[in-house]
Image (cartoon, rainbow, N blue to C red):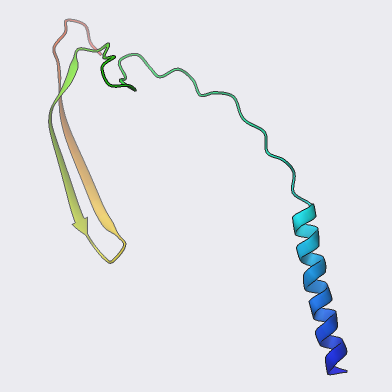
Length: 84
């Protein structure tokens, strides 16, 4: 009786794995993201903004083996006449 139970359990496991593997569907790509807003600099050397970073401070407080609290502070300056 014990052997039949073991075979039955293995059969159920194999059946479940077969159903999981056979029930997947192919993934399809989504549409491209929107254009970035005016003033962003996604590539170096193509700046279209007069806003410059003057200072950056990043504080990291390591709280454990795999954890940290991070605080970042940025000082920006607009060198142009229009608000960005």
